[in-house]
Amino acid sequence: MASTFNKLAGTGNFFLLAGPCVIEGEEMAFEIGRHIKQVCSALEIPFAFKGSYRKANRSRLDSFTGIGDIEALKILNGVGRELGVPVVTDIHTAEEAAMAADFVDILQIPAFLCRQTDLLIAAARTGKAVNIKKGQFLAPESMRFAVEKVRAGANNDVAVTERGTTFGYGDLIVDFRGVPVMKQSCNCPVIVDCTHSLQQPNTAGGVTGGRPELIETIARAAVVTGADGLFMETHPHPELAKSDGANMLRLDLLEGLLTRLVAIRRTIDSF
Image (cartoon, rainbow, N blue to C red; front, side, top):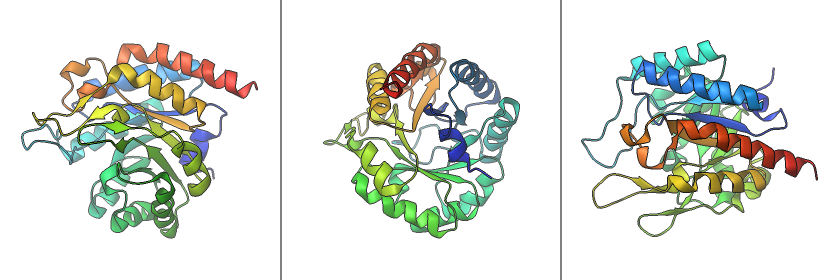
Protein backbone atom coordinates (compact mmCIF):
# COMPACT_ATOMS: atom_id res chain seq x y z
CA MET A 1 0.00 0.00 0.00
CA ALA A 2 1.45 3.37 -1.06
CA SER A 3 2.35 5.81 1.67
CA THR A 4 0.58 9.17 1.99
CA PHE A 5 3.56 11.09 0.63
CA ASN A 6 4.14 8.61 -2.18
CA LYS A 7 0.54 9.12 -3.28
CA LEU A 8 0.87 12.90 -3.13
CA ALA A 9 4.19 12.94 -4.97
CA GLY A 10 3.47 10.23 -7.49
CA THR A 11 1.46 12.17 -10.09
CA GLY A 12 4.20 14.07 -11.91
CA ASN A 13 2.91 17.41 -10.63
CA PHE A 14 3.91 19.15 -7.42
CA PHE A 15 1.55 18.58 -4.49
CA LEU A 16 0.13 21.19 -2.14
CA LEU A 17 -0.25 21.33 1.64
CA ALA A 18 -2.50 24.32 2.29
CA GLY A 19 -5.08 25.77 4.62
CA PRO A 20 -5.38 28.26 7.47
CA CYS A 21 -2.65 28.77 10.04
CA VAL A 22 -4.94 27.68 12.87
CA ILE A 23 -8.49 26.37 13.03
CA GLU A 24 -10.59 29.36 14.09
CA GLY A 25 -13.94 27.62 13.64
CA GLU A 26 -15.84 25.11 11.53
CA GLU A 27 -17.27 27.52 8.94
CA MET A 28 -13.92 29.06 8.01
CA ALA A 29 -12.17 25.70 7.81
CA PHE A 30 -14.72 24.24 5.40
CA GLU A 31 -14.83 27.43 3.31
CA ILE A 32 -11.08 27.41 2.84
CA GLY A 33 -10.86 23.65 2.30
CA ARG A 34 -13.62 23.55 -0.33
CA HIS A 35 -12.08 26.41 -2.28
CA ILE A 36 -8.61 24.88 -2.32
CA LYS A 37 -9.99 21.48 -3.32
CA GLN A 38 -11.94 23.00 -6.22
CA VAL A 39 -8.86 24.83 -7.53
CA CYS A 40 -6.54 21.85 -7.08
CA SER A 41 -8.96 19.43 -8.76
CA ALA A 42 -9.17 21.68 -11.83
CA LEU A 43 -5.38 21.95 -12.03
CA GLU A 44 -4.69 18.29 -11.14
CA ILE A 45 -2.66 19.21 -8.08
CA PRO A 46 -2.68 16.61 -5.27
CA PHE A 47 -3.83 18.40 -2.12
CA ALA A 48 -3.66 17.88 1.64
CA PHE A 49 -5.58 20.23 3.94
CA LYS A 50 -3.48 21.90 6.63
CA GLY A 51 -4.61 23.47 9.87
CA SER A 52 -3.08 23.70 13.33
CA TYR A 53 -5.40 22.55 16.10
CA ARG A 54 -3.36 24.62 18.55
CA LYS A 55 -0.59 27.17 18.25
CA ALA A 56 1.99 26.44 20.92
CA ASN A 57 4.70 28.78 19.64
CA ARG A 58 3.44 32.37 19.91
CA SER A 59 5.32 35.60 20.45
CA ARG A 60 3.13 36.97 23.24
CA LEU A 61 1.22 35.44 26.12
CA ASP A 62 -2.05 37.03 24.96
CA SER A 63 -1.81 35.63 21.39
CA PHE A 64 -4.64 33.38 20.16
CA THR A 65 -3.78 29.70 20.52
CA GLY A 66 -6.92 27.84 19.44
CA ILE A 67 -10.54 26.90 20.07
CA GLY A 68 -9.75 23.70 21.98
CA ASP A 69 -7.72 20.69 20.91
CA ILE A 70 -10.42 18.07 20.38
CA GLU A 71 -12.90 20.50 18.85
CA ALA A 72 -10.33 21.66 16.31
CA LEU A 73 -9.15 18.11 15.56
CA LYS A 74 -12.74 17.04 14.90
CA ILE A 75 -13.12 19.92 12.44
CA LEU A 76 -9.90 18.90 10.67
CA ASN A 77 -11.13 15.33 10.44
CA GLY A 78 -14.48 16.48 9.08
CA VAL A 79 -12.85 18.56 6.35
CA GLY A 80 -10.70 15.62 5.31
CA ARG A 81 -13.66 13.23 5.17
CA GLU A 82 -15.89 15.60 3.19
CA LEU A 83 -13.23 16.55 0.66
CA GLY A 84 -11.59 13.14 0.46
CA VAL A 85 -8.10 14.54 1.08
CA PRO A 86 -5.37 13.87 3.66
CA VAL A 87 -5.18 16.27 6.61
CA VAL A 88 -2.02 17.61 8.27
CA THR A 89 -1.57 19.27 11.65
CA ASP A 90 1.31 20.19 13.96
CA ILE A 91 2.15 18.39 17.18
CA HIS A 92 4.36 19.80 19.91
CA THR A 93 5.02 17.01 22.43
CA ALA A 94 5.41 13.25 22.27
CA GLU A 95 2.16 12.89 24.24
CA GLU A 96 0.20 14.73 21.54
CA ALA A 97 1.19 12.34 18.77
CA ALA A 98 -1.30 9.56 19.52
CA MET A 99 -4.11 12.03 20.21
CA ALA A 100 -3.69 13.88 16.91
CA ALA A 101 -3.13 10.67 14.95
CA ASP A 102 -6.72 9.62 15.72
CA PHE A 103 -7.96 12.53 13.58
CA VAL A 104 -5.38 13.34 10.88
CA ASP A 105 -3.21 11.65 8.25
CA ILE A 106 0.04 13.65 8.49
CA LEU A 107 1.74 14.76 11.69
CA GLN A 108 3.88 17.86 11.23
CA ILE A 109 6.93 18.59 13.38
CA PRO A 110 7.44 22.35 13.87
CA ALA A 111 10.80 23.74 12.81
CA PHE A 112 11.90 24.69 16.33
CA LEU A 113 11.28 21.07 17.42
CA CYS A 114 12.86 19.19 14.52
CA ARG A 115 15.71 17.81 16.69
CA GLN A 116 13.44 16.50 19.48
CA THR A 117 14.09 12.77 19.39
CA ASP A 118 11.16 11.70 21.58
CA LEU A 119 8.73 13.78 19.50
CA LEU A 120 9.99 12.40 16.18
CA ILE A 121 9.88 8.79 17.33
CA ALA A 122 6.44 9.18 18.91
CA ALA A 123 5.12 10.62 15.65
CA ALA A 124 6.72 7.80 13.67
CA ARG A 125 5.24 5.09 15.87
CA THR A 126 1.68 6.25 15.20
CA GLY A 127 2.09 4.93 11.66
CA LYS A 128 0.94 8.25 10.21
CA ALA A 129 2.99 10.21 7.69
CA VAL A 130 5.45 12.67 9.25
CA ASN A 131 6.41 16.06 7.80
CA ILE A 132 9.49 17.57 9.46
CA LYS A 133 10.04 21.28 9.04
CA LYS A 134 13.71 22.23 8.81
CA GLY A 135 14.85 24.30 11.74
CA GLN A 136 15.71 27.91 11.01
CA PHE A 137 19.09 27.11 12.55
CA LEU A 138 19.97 23.93 10.60
CA ALA A 139 21.91 23.26 7.42
CA PRO A 140 19.95 21.25 4.83
CA GLU A 141 22.44 18.37 5.16
CA SER A 142 21.58 18.02 8.86
CA MET A 143 17.94 17.13 8.18
CA ARG A 144 18.89 13.58 7.31
CA PHE A 145 19.41 12.89 11.01
CA ALA A 146 15.82 13.94 11.80
CA VAL A 147 14.58 11.70 8.98
CA GLU A 148 16.66 8.81 10.34
CA LYS A 149 14.91 9.16 13.71
CA VAL A 150 11.52 8.75 12.04
CA ARG A 151 12.72 5.75 10.07
CA ALA A 152 14.11 4.28 13.28
CA GLY A 153 10.49 4.26 14.48
CA ALA A 154 9.67 1.86 11.63
CA ASN A 155 8.10 4.58 9.51
CA ASN A 156 9.27 5.45 5.99
CA ASP A 157 6.36 7.78 5.22
CA VAL A 158 8.31 10.99 5.81
CA ALA A 159 8.96 14.34 4.12
CA VAL A 160 10.99 17.43 4.98
CA THR A 161 10.05 21.08 4.54
CA GLU A 162 12.28 24.07 3.89
CA ARG A 163 10.96 27.19 5.65
CA GLY A 164 13.84 29.61 5.64
CA THR A 165 16.97 30.21 7.68
CA THR A 166 17.38 32.89 10.34
CA PHE A 167 18.99 35.97 8.82
CA GLY A 168 19.86 38.47 11.53
CA TYR A 169 17.38 39.01 14.32
CA GLY A 170 14.17 39.63 12.40
CA ASP A 171 14.24 38.02 8.99
CA LEU A 172 14.55 34.72 7.12
CA ILE A 173 16.17 33.78 3.85
CA VAL A 174 15.61 30.68 1.69
CA ASP A 175 18.71 28.95 0.33
CA PHE A 176 17.27 27.04 -2.62
CA ARG A 177 20.42 24.92 -2.85
CA GLY A 178 18.82 23.07 0.05
CA VAL A 179 16.09 21.57 -2.15
CA PRO A 180 18.35 19.25 -4.17
CA VAL A 181 20.62 18.75 -1.17
CA MET A 182 17.76 17.44 0.99
CA LYS A 183 16.30 15.37 -1.85
CA GLN A 184 19.63 13.56 -2.09
CA SER A 185 20.64 13.36 1.57
CA CYS A 186 17.19 12.61 3.05
CA ASN A 187 15.88 10.48 0.16
CA CYS A 188 12.30 11.63 0.68
CA PRO A 189 9.93 14.27 -0.72
CA VAL A 190 11.04 17.87 -0.18
CA ILE A 191 8.47 20.60 0.37
CA VAL A 192 9.02 24.37 0.37
CA ASP A 193 6.97 26.48 2.76
CA CYS A 194 6.15 29.54 0.67
CA THR A 195 4.51 31.56 3.46
CA HIS A 196 6.45 30.96 6.68
CA SER A 197 9.65 31.52 4.70
CA LEU A 198 8.55 35.15 4.44
CA GLN A 199 7.95 35.73 8.13
CA GLN A 200 9.65 38.59 9.94
CA PRO A 201 9.78 37.26 13.51
CA ASN A 202 10.79 38.94 16.74
CA THR A 203 9.32 42.35 16.04
CA ALA A 204 9.38 44.86 18.87
CA GLY A 205 5.60 44.74 19.21
CA GLY A 206 5.57 40.97 19.69
CA VAL A 207 3.57 40.26 16.51
CA THR A 208 5.27 38.43 13.65
CA GLY A 209 5.44 40.38 10.40
CA GLY A 210 5.80 39.13 6.84
CA ARG A 211 6.24 39.78 3.12
CA PRO A 212 3.24 38.13 1.44
CA GLU A 213 3.86 40.02 -1.80
CA LEU A 214 6.86 37.67 -2.30
CA ILE A 215 4.93 34.39 -1.92
CA GLU A 216 4.88 33.87 -5.68
CA THR A 217 8.62 34.53 -5.90
CA ILE A 218 9.35 31.79 -3.36
CA ALA A 219 6.85 29.41 -4.97
CA ARG A 220 8.25 29.91 -8.48
CA ALA A 221 11.79 29.27 -7.26
CA ALA A 222 10.63 26.16 -5.39
CA VAL A 223 9.09 24.67 -8.54
CA VAL A 224 12.15 25.51 -10.64
CA THR A 225 14.57 23.95 -8.15
CA GLY A 226 12.62 20.68 -8.08
CA ALA A 227 10.53 20.80 -4.91
CA ASP A 228 8.10 17.88 -4.72
CA GLY A 229 5.53 19.88 -2.79
CA LEU A 230 4.54 23.39 -1.75
CA PHE A 231 3.20 24.51 1.62
CA MET A 232 1.02 27.62 1.87
CA GLU A 233 -1.19 29.12 4.52
CA THR A 234 -4.20 30.94 3.15
CA HIS A 235 -7.23 32.80 4.50
CA PRO A 236 -10.12 34.74 2.95
CA HIS A 237 -9.15 37.80 4.99
CA PRO A 238 -5.53 37.57 6.22
CA GLU A 239 -5.86 40.92 7.97
CA LEU A 240 -8.50 39.33 10.22
CA ALA A 241 -6.74 35.99 10.74
CA LYS A 242 -6.02 35.15 14.36
CA SER A 243 -2.53 33.83 13.64
CA ASP A 244 0.18 34.60 11.04
CA GLY A 245 -2.03 36.88 8.96
CA ALA A 246 0.97 39.00 8.00
CA ASN A 247 2.47 36.30 5.79
CA MET A 248 -0.59 34.40 4.53
CA LEU A 249 -1.85 34.24 0.94
CA ARG A 250 -5.27 35.78 0.36
CA LEU A 251 -7.56 32.93 -0.66
CA ASP A 252 -8.83 34.54 -3.84
CA LEU A 253 -5.26 34.80 -5.15
CA LEU A 254 -4.64 31.06 -4.92
CA GLU A 255 -6.09 29.99 -8.27
CA GLY A 256 -4.07 32.44 -10.33
CA LEU A 257 -0.87 31.61 -8.48
CA LEU A 258 -1.29 27.85 -8.83
CA THR A 259 -2.22 28.18 -12.51
CA ARG A 260 1.06 29.97 -13.19
CA LEU A 261 3.04 27.46 -11.13
CA VAL A 262 1.56 24.51 -13.01
CA ALA A 263 2.54 26.18 -16.29
CA ILE A 264 6.11 26.55 -15.00
CA ARG A 265 6.21 22.91 -13.93
CA ARG A 266 4.94 21.72 -17.31
CA THR A 267 7.49 23.85 -19.12
CA ILE A 268 10.31 22.39 -17.04
CA ASP A 269 9.06 18.85 -17.64
CA SER A 270 9.01 19.46 -21.40
CA PHE A 271 12.79 19.84 -21.57
